[in-house]
Length: 639
Image (cartoon, rainbow, N blue to C red; front, side):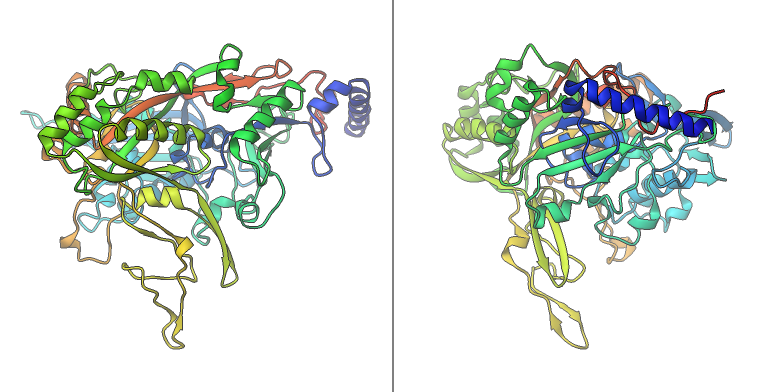
């Protein structure tokens, strides 16, 4: 009875609030599908996947992914590791004589948005997926302190996922065996760096996943029908395939409170851990380019129809430079060189291209950016990468290398005006050196064939294919390694047609927003060694024919490989010194060229209270409140 009375009183309060505050209604309006007020937000780009394993190739995805998923640990605003879903951690076996080092992490009680409990085996599943030999992901190095993780990824010693040193002990306990260090003169094994390991576990890439949908569906991470969330919000409404392929509606993502996040139904009010009812993210109107969509969003912000904007168009950034909230980003805009291209094979050519770029002038045009002289975020290591141009030295290096002309392309993501502006800036500088430069824009293509609607992100697939030609396929379309169609049904000999729009040319230079998934420099430096690249192993070969997978750039330096291998075996100051040495060498060889680091710049309405920002500028809406807010679901029995 008390609950019914509370419901009636809340409904009256809500009605009164909406009637008496027209501004409130216009600011946090309802629609016919939603029963609570929604924060109106704008982001710059359309995430092509909600899969944590791949989403972080896209800087705009970070704002959404941190709302949908939560791992064992996370970083606070100062970069300190704090607990996420980890309740406690203890050493259960720590023996330097035997080299056995084991910890157990107990999980907090929390549930996915479909009410299923978050369990330890879901972390194990997600991590096994990352170190699968067939997977292509550089973030696998985050797990290499776990026993057998690296060997499994490299398909060595006939080890499988069942030999992985992370296992579930019941529902809520994760047992992790760590790799021992080398033995000393007394035969004692070196202790693993536990603090460094826990720091890696704070990476948003290492969140739990559900095997039910992923193991059955190839395109599970593109629709709200198959994406489930264990974070504070879940994906209420969004279908990438429908929107891209045929829809004329606005591209809107709706997130709604996950009322099962950390919450006990019997004792906790529905808004105890997550205050807002939901978030509407209007990315752009179909048929409107990103620049115009962003300008429209800012105009709506001025009218009170948007409350949070994380992207400002280039031509309006100077105007709002003092009005935005700025935070450091974990993304560095980089150029990956295809070192297999004869024109780019010589490091002196790549050094010359870098020297021709006036990074200081570029970031002034971009406004929310800082010059980058390394791919390591916030690095203090001095490198040969300069912030201002030295054209004379660049020309001298080219002459020394015997290369004074030639043509190549820069591949950028379609619709990304910052990437395009940067490419145009570099194109101008490089054409002054005598090169012919073409800018190639790749986005996502949609098609409907063989009763299957599909979307392929051509840009990311081009990147992951190491610069070779990419042929896009789905479960009904198969081609051989040369792009020739094969038969879907050998008995019926039904051929499969491969259309030109399903192909993307390999890149010469590709613009990548490189994400530092953890604070440890090793996690961003190691993947440029072929022994830590995280590339996919061709399992059709005999095991004794397996070869280390070269990184996307094709870079293969014995000196660099050795430095990374040595750093992997060290700890403390010795390890840091070795990584600094590797960083300097990589920035001399320049298979990857840092251009600038992003600054997060957001406009946030004063009507939103308690919006906070985590490490790397990740926004936290969990405690956000509105003026005169009454949550239609937040009904609590009176004592």
